[in-house]
Length: 453
Image 1: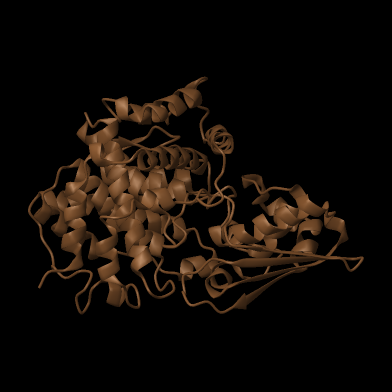
Image 2: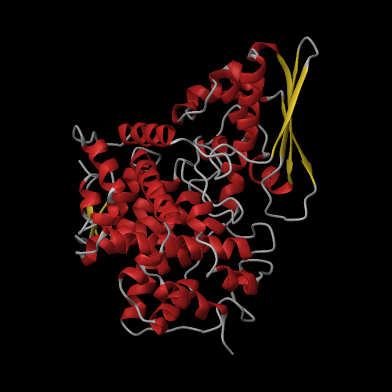
């Protein structure tokens, strides 16, 4: 009996650049550049240098480079480090319906393959990223339950295999084997999310590494079980509580998921962004002074509360704070934005932030889809008993409420500035131009030349 993974493998092998729409190519370029910037900022994030050092202890190699550092590592190790850096600041793009950070695994795996193989064109890279996003997001959209495991890591691993398998020109049977081999390595506990542990980003790294290993094993002739999605112990039984594989396979020919991806304009969990967006919009519309706020009430779907409804604490880990809607809402109202420097011990101890955060209440309501992040209803009440409210059906950064190119590039430039080692003058602008003209690039490894000192 055929498994749905066969249709996914066929989709990957059948993708050709000439059949891609301008909108698909444009979206892939946008989130490629955005993810490079986030990965550079992540090079100065918690434990990034320590992760590079541990990978050096595991063995030397010159397959690929770690962004921001320039350290050369075997492909799997480089993919792990770069994936960790993309996700360690909660600033990377996301497919909201899928609840999957589609580039976090896919891009580092693809770039490790590009560097190791050599001679991959910009067009080949775009093909790989686009099918990787199709697979990672497609699995998330097909899920019919809330998150049991950390879906950005588990679904991302399949996307990573799709991307690297495309670049390696794996056959249909080899791709099926690679998907099976990565399935046997999947990991990603939601307990890391609940506790705000840096294991969250590390799990992204684990699955990026495992995607490279799976493709290499498949190319060497290793195989695995066939019914890895639909089987008795398949993905949608063990890692999800059911899935609509019929809609998954049918959607492959109709939709390019990269076009549905949302920017993250703020470095916090995407589930906080509807609350931030609503608070800032009400503040802009009505000139609300933070010192005059008596209360903020957010009514959100259950998944939003599960992910970011945690209580404010006087002492928090950096990941806990990024996933605390009370804290990030207070920061946004006080600063009229949210930045990476809002996540420090000094910021958490700030009395104004703590006081305002404790006046933010997160309430839930029922929706039909357990993966819903919207709508979000925000109400701000002032000390003079004035009430301002709004409901958001789209959040800033989504395709329905997109960031401008200017805002996209401003985020990228700022993230480049935050790299652990200063990039040479002009490197940032050169990389922007190179990505704009990516389909003309004959060797996509040149992109990484712009990501290292």
